[in-house]
Length: 510
Image (cartoon, rainbow, N blue to C red; front, top):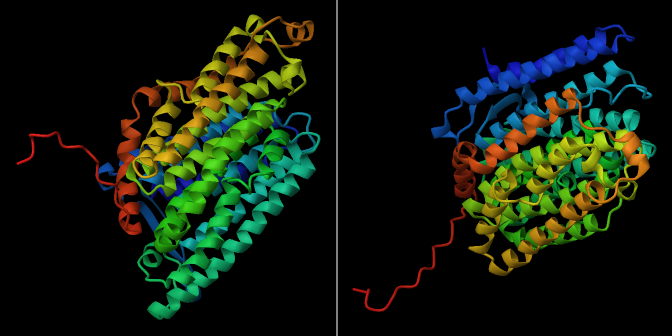
């Protein structure tokens, strides 16, 4: 039995079962959805235990079946250390989202069972996009994810859900079109060099492609990934999509789907087009630094809580892209760990903000104040999630952000100095939001509507905070899985870490 195949199929089967349930039995649909998602998470833990950490740079636990033999397309999946941690992140967040968003679909235009089925279909697509080892299959999942997200936003979102859903779809389809053009070009190159076209990732990574051709193919992939990430100036769809989504959809959108962009840069841009990646590095690093500062400044100026959290993610993704393209092992390991840590901290922020908004009936910061007096547990959870987002030492994001900056400083000192300003700005947007919503006098409207977290809500948020604290103090097991895969990327790109510049004291030379 191949457990990766089981993991991929399980949410799809669960979605089919949910759709066959009676339309008026929303409770049963929720129960089945949660049961399937918890089972999928258990299967992902089996994968983690079967994974050989010592060979974390190799693709393991895979399978391959001929799909379109005439074009060399296979339905092939396997995981290396980078893919494994992102698959685990996906399967961990889905049951959290379903438990936390128990009432998200109630009273909406769509059915409850439709909402649960869409989330499960999306989970399967997320697993597929991280585990695919056939580049055409990766593209299929890259595009397939758009369908459930479009309906999750457009049918179950806020007042401007149609606008946000269409904007998200158009941006993503444009990026996907560019990737498809590059994918076709990559196939033609492989056919010219091998005599038989292929989409197998390992075979494509071994090709020697003309530098000018590399640049054009790289741009198609990179722009698609920059839109998905999102990286400035391709980011404008995210605040609207996150603000109009249900909290659960926002968690999956920002916590997992956007990681496909940075994952794609690390996996496909660097390994398939190493010379083009080196050529583009100065521009990409500049865009990453702009994203860090610009996203943070926009977050500081927001009055809408959900848009504020979305803009913080623009800043965080700037750090991740920076770590990928500084071409150091510390930077790329930190960027991969950052993808995981950002998923948990942003999930906690969006879900707790969602509880606040649903109670108060408003998502504007000015309508809150003094929440900690009437909801101390909610305020405490919100503080921990916020402190993780600003990379407080002892919480998970600190380790990943430190590694990214360390990897940046050893190669681009001034870039590291500028990027460090993002930490200062992060303290401003998080602490100001907490001060304005949680402290001070408690308005009567807040006192009457905002109650503390209930048992189910605590059950959904507590595991996220446990992971945030655990990875803050003990990230090494995750890094042990990630590092061998990062070493493989560095070798394929032809990059090496700068030699340490240690001055030699006088009198010690021989």
